[in-house]
Image 1: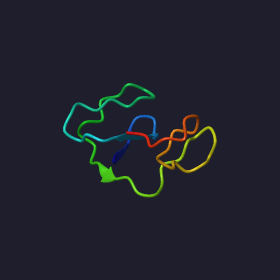
Image 2: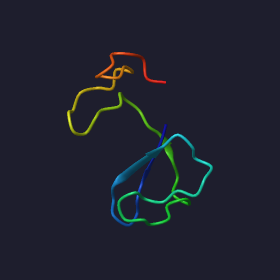
Image 3: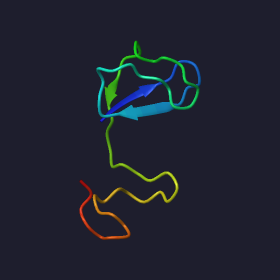
Image 4: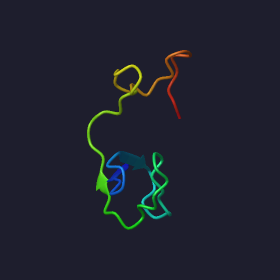
Length: 64
């Protein structure tokens, strides 16, 4: 997973592909030229602040 910080709005954007045109999902600025870094740490659901466990919370099955 890659992370870029938008130079226009300052918010972080994440993607699994660093070779495509990358638009900031918040302000729609083209940030393709911004250097990407490897995102570190557990994925967290911003609504619940709970770490991503790899399981669907409703079906309790592995997420593909």
